[in-house]
Image (cartoon, rainbow, N blue to C red):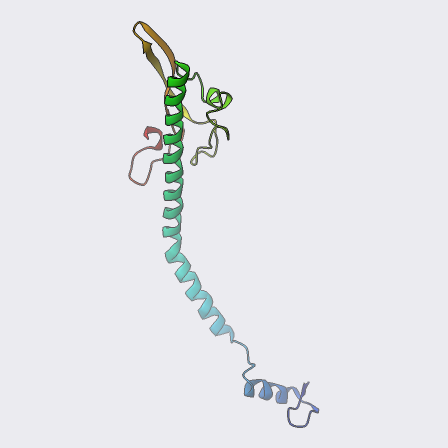
Amino acid sequence: MGRNMRTGRLGSSRQAVDSAERWGLGGFTLLELMFVITVILVLASFTMPSFRVAVIHAREAVLRDDLFTLRKLIDEFTIDKQRPPASLDELVEAGYLRGGIPVDPFTNSNETWKTDTEEVPLSPGQAAAGIVDVHSGSDDTSLDGTPYSSW
């Protein structure tokens, strides 16, 4: 039951519908809602692949930055201590990595980093074994086709 606009009296439901239509208070039809939802889904299906690529680009940028930082700190440790670090944990203990070992963005773990260990010449006739390089522990390949473990 709706209130008649002219008289202020309660009228039939048909009068309420007429009044709502007159004042632009009508709702959407089911067909209109289905059309709008379909358009939204079509647009979303076009954007999802580009969203996924953007996420991978961001993770690759984080990996590049982490590898650059780790390699730089390994070199600084080697120069400062006159020997290469035996493990990545040693960089944390010595204060070179204040926030701890970074998380590999593709394995979501800080324990999957692969390290290259070699004999590093310190002075003529002296060498010490330790970490000289670090790589991602992921078996995935990058967008350009190279494995992350070879970066």
